[in-house]
Length: 396
Length: 218
Image 1 (spheres, each protein chain N blue to C red):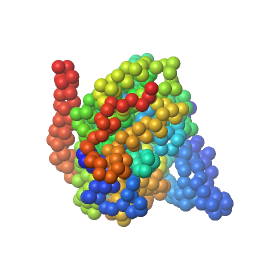
Image 2: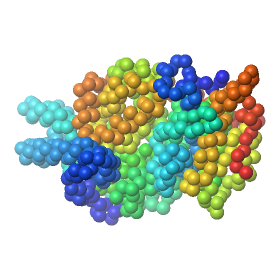
Image 3: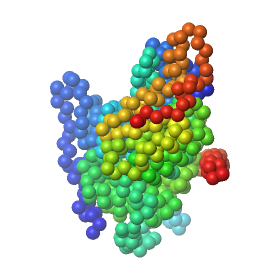
Image 4: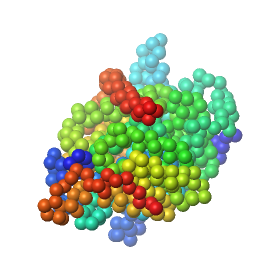
């Protein structure tokens, strides 16, 4: 009805169309840069080593699939929903034990990656999107889309402006159908939460959600649960105050977890927010290869926003030696960009993110955010007052 | 010299630079302006001589660099291309802090974007470094038939505010190199190098050339 059917199996189709990549001996010799489409239809530029890594990743994805299918076969199709049941106190102890065991298995499994075919189902259940959707009438999304059709607001104008600028060249997103679908999701959400309305960055997030979830209604609910429950509040509202808070927390963490890098960058007068702001607002979708981004999102939807800090710190940590040798801001940025663009093996990143960064609890992070909030508010307020004083002077 | 923080290569706090750095001047430059005005397109044309009809929307900011020769000096521009949506303005100070130059871009087919540009000018005048070279760039001259902002109006405004003014088209590459060249030759350190060629000459803080409202698009 809303263009959802025709693209229902888009990701699957894309997967089946892509042959295993076999670089020819010629390109091997010449170490040529090759262009190819990845699992989600994005054009990737890389050398032969990158192609080999991607083939290995494909094999690992298949192996993970076999593990998940085996679990489904032995524990039942929705076995991963049982940890939620464990929150109920009235459970019998034997059930509780199996639920706890499931929770441990699940966390470990998710860190190793959800197979792409299972992603829509698993994300939808574990993120809380299914629950959110169940609290409103079945027709909520369709009614919303009908109600807002033809309305023009500041948000819809900005959305229209960004549609062709969201992953331009993607074989489905950059088509009239892709634009129309992304538009409905973003416009729908802008009316659901007028405080957020539309924030640039959400176009990339929603686009990737569409590619994974396969139906626009599910993508919409994933966007809703992300902004309303998973991420910290006000990341995308008027002055991005939530984003400012996250950046300050991140800087403190970098000083604590990677003190040598933090000190070196400070000496170069390099503010890490210069690069990390985009990472946090686009949830890495503009920086990391698609499967790597989605592996981060697997963890994001199960364990929460702390994974963003783990991953951001890991990117710096992985390149510690190189970063310590830099003399210029430009060199730092080049290293970070080259690193993120070539992280084709998600495990390279996630191993560092979880094994070398040390643990962080959501409670500690919440405390850190609380600590930073007053300073952010004061800073934003001060800027606003300064700008307003300009107007007063002008009016005189 | 004021504004020295922008020239990181010569700041004593910095590690020494390898190679023939004596004449390379690092200059931080920031692009500001409404969304869709063409900030990223101007940078891409300047840095890579490329143009795309639909340039990915910038989130936060993107970094580019390119070195240009001006007289005897090499100027390495470290360019911060910022996101245009209004809510991103709260991030702007991070990008213009320590900048030697700013390009404020508007779209000549949008009066709204010109109004937004004026707001940026006011903000920079108030908060930026007093020696900051501010350039007002009216982009998209290839869309002459859709023009809404007269060149004269913008020029008058720029003269009042002591800005460099230029009209450009990232699409056709018109005036794009010139835009950056005009900035490079106004950098105090470039001017100091020219002046120091005359022995015994006393350097003043700002040369008349630099303080004079400039217009280079006639």
